[in-house]
Length: 438
Image (cartoon, rainbow, N blue to C red):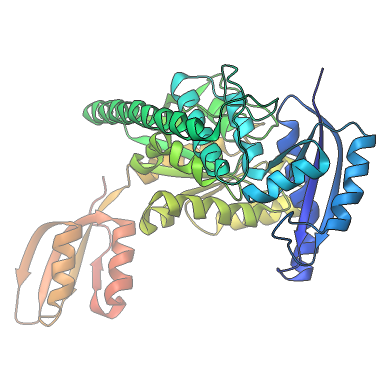
């Protein structure tokens, strides 16, 4: 029998009222999609205003009592609160409503528990589950759930006492961390082997359900699971792609990000997400048809920053503006205009294939930038500029004269523009911008 779930979305008044009102509907829809990503029945949903969060139950006692009657009449078995609950709040709500209560972190962990397929993925999810459970032991539960071959939260409790629970959890966490350290070392060896080939690695990142797996399948002719569902992809997949010039690269499909991504998951999936850190190029797949596309963009950038991706790599990231096939004519034209105004931005549809050829061209330009030879005339007092050229380009020749220094240097156009930005156009009188091109 399918578990009956009720979704509750609290709107905290601590944020600006207008912002809370405008974002509540979208946040509720995303939470519904999260619930529907697991095998349960969404029996109801509601938004509740929280003028002042209660330390004991988050929402006010009157609303707690009203909802208790609603849940009893609807035979609700699990209530999902789309927010963060403290252990004491979770315990008190479970006692008041006489149902299992999950917060947003618990729900996402539940999804990951169902989706993980590979041994590595299962270990990562288990580690995140155990870390979360340990934080809930102190003042919430006096027992853990009975072991059923998984660490799922939905289900009845077991009978283990809290003191032994802590010891059991600690032992499991230590063991899983050791196993995942071996996984990290194995991945490092694989990356080292790829560098010897050498094939550059391109990592697809983005908000969950942005279309990364669909794009991955389109570019590689693979059959990775791609559904209109949050977190359809958990386990990383890598395939070769052929670039327009015939060169080969490796494309990596990674787990999707989401707002308020549990810290336990970021830590547990670090071994997998290291593929992003080590990638030669990052492609950020964005769902431009989503009403909160800009917010999702900020969430992804926040997770990448948390992972330790350097600022210059974020600036050099390619933006794939996906799902333009779902836009109306005016919206589509606006996105395409934005994409044509600069390099590194591509409007496309992974579903139809439109724009994918241009994305491959952008990837190749980023991985194998065209190097050109520039002849620059600099003054004797511009030693810093000359030093920059030696550090960033390949100096072919240098002639020192009474009027100054003439340097012939090979570098990419991007590096040349960086040089001009750093030292100003007046500091570099370009005699011949392109004496030769490769």
